[in-house]
Image 1 (cartoon, rainbow, N blue to C red):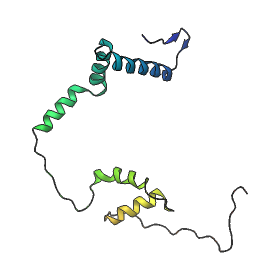
Image 2: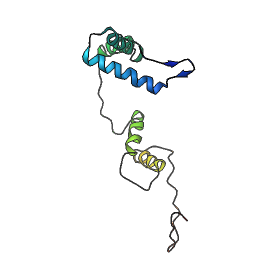
Image 3: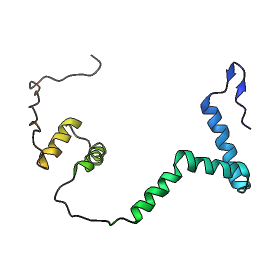
Image 4: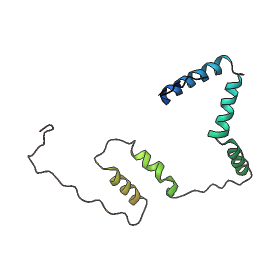
Length: 131
């Protein structure tokens, strides 16, 4: 249903995605019971979301007990989330590595080196950009 190009002159994937997206939106809005729309949803559930595995996991979770524990400091699983939030904070002169090391030391991590002293500029010397 979507034109993929002539032999030797294939249409780029970006253009194909735009065309199929447009068709999907039109069919979804004006003919929601269309067989192609239903097939697209079924394929997305089956192949992209792996619906059968998702259902099995949700059923398994439903039978388990949920245990909530109060913790004193973040667990290792929280590390990627915390590092991500460091990148969104205010401007700072510290490098990302320095900020991560500082965060790790504040939570009592062992083996994290102390930051090295930065080189200070000589008084009276300024640098100009472009020279």
